[in-house]
Length: 68
Image (cartoon, rainbow, N blue to C red):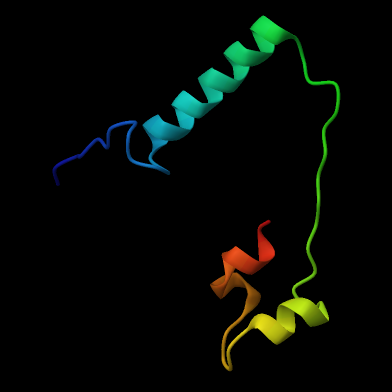
């Protein structure tokens, strides 16, 4: 088959992800490594999340609720 290459302007494409990686490495090179690394987690069974879901929906269907 024919190979198609997506440009870096398409979010999620390999070229886009590579560009983000290069940008992050360049930023770290110029400014130095980050001082803090913060990771947050979300439990999809939290009552606030469950209440915001429509019947039949899962937390993965509503990133606007779980990713804040």
